[in-house]
Image (cartoon, rainbow, N blue to C red; front, side):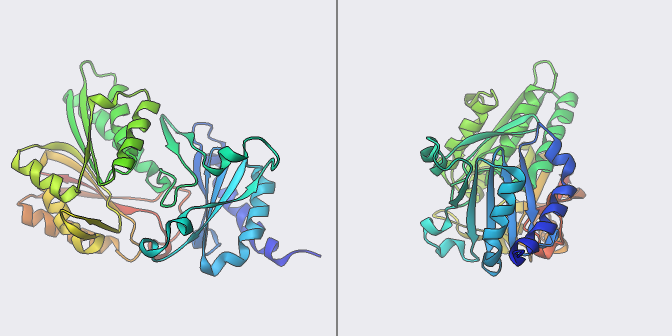
Amino acid sequence: MNDPAIEDVAAPLAAACKKRGSLLRDRELEAVRLVNGAGDGMPGLFVDRFGDLLIVHVEESATGQLAALVRELAARFEPRAIYAKELRREVRTAPKDAQAPMLVHQRDEGSPDAAELAAPELTVREHAFRFLVRPCEGYSPGLFLDQRDNRLDLAREITARLKKRSECTVLNLFSYTCSFSVAAALAARESGVAHAHCKVTSVDLSQRWLDWGVRNFAANGLDPAAHEFARGDALTFLGIAAKKRRFFDVLVLDPPTFATSKQSGIFQVERDYPKLFELAARVAAPGATLLCSHNQRDFTRPALVKKLKAGAVKAGRRILRLDPFQSPADFPGADLVNPAARGYWAVLA
């Protein structure tokens, strides 16, 4: 007798994999979202591939399909391991052990690397970049796949700027494990411009994430000592930078939905984006490019545009261009049900 749960996931999983055919065949791309919830006809289910490991994120409404999905994934991809994590709306109040993914499938259950699978770290390729990921991390494995195309665009922006002028300063706020910083620094090194100099400053509240970022730099053959890793609150950093008259050519603003710091208190992305953009605009050099991003589902693109314009007015700056970016091909779905980041590339006069 056929298992109805298997039948419920088998067809949409096959269709999702077919849509990602070119991504899955790309040997320089080891980190791909295989299933993106409702965008792939599988509401409440999300699957990410990192090398030979898979992570399943499941909302409460879809937990009944988890076992069937794991069996299908194991049969289709033969991964070394599959981890599963329950998605909770109130992540901040959930206990840490509830946030961590659980090992739900192991290819060779009796193998001697079982202990390694309980807390693995692996390096994955993303085109020219190399990133360290940890599937057992509670918040995230260390790499946001929905920003893949933006990392490539940032690298192109750095290269183009260095070809016009051999110096470029980059500020990456809320930098997490510094993947944007890696993209900028590696692009500068590979630009082919003689005497190119690009200093990247990464700012984050967590020293742990910054230390991870330093290791990401090393994984790409980059010298962390040539760049700056600043632990602290992003808004406070911007205020101090303005007083010191530090200016940046390229800025990355990709804040979390919610954050708390001793310096600035509670940061809520939709409410506080105008203030963030205002402060960033005050330290943006003439002609600076800013990546303005977020992933709060009900914070719409038109609403973000209003926030950016309000921040620019307060800073006394003029926005020359606002170019929307789109989600990568492996993040299909309408904005209001899609967890992918959304936003704009802004250029200031």
